[in-house]
Amino acid sequence: MTVPTIPTAAEVIAALTPGTCRTTVALEAVVGTDREAGQALVRLDRFDEVLEDGTVAMDRWLVSFHPAGLDFAEIPASDIPVLIDKLTEIHRAWLYLDPANLA
Image (cartoon, rainbow, N blue to C red; front, side, top):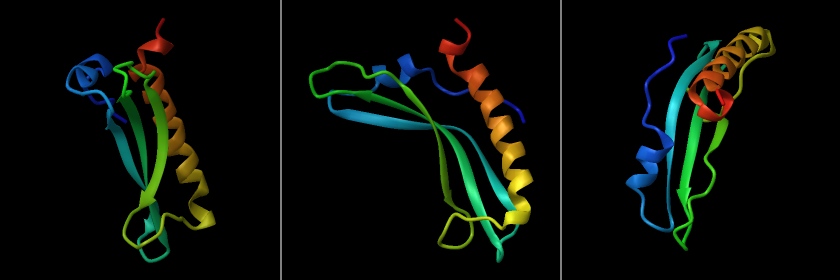
């Protein structure tokens, strides 16, 4: 998996006004070999927020699951190894993307 270039938290925060937030999608991958059997879009997101009082909240990194194809985010049990592999790749990318991990 290639680690993308995304805006820094500071760049995102600079564009926000008090009481607003933004989710930056760092990575996404579809897991599931068959659309009809079930697929899920797995994303690595960074959530940046400026609170109402102007305080910058600590950025949060999240893994989120979304429907891919059908109206639900589920995969057949036979695709669990693929999901584990994707989550491992996402974890490695997060280790690289989050500056707190490099400190």
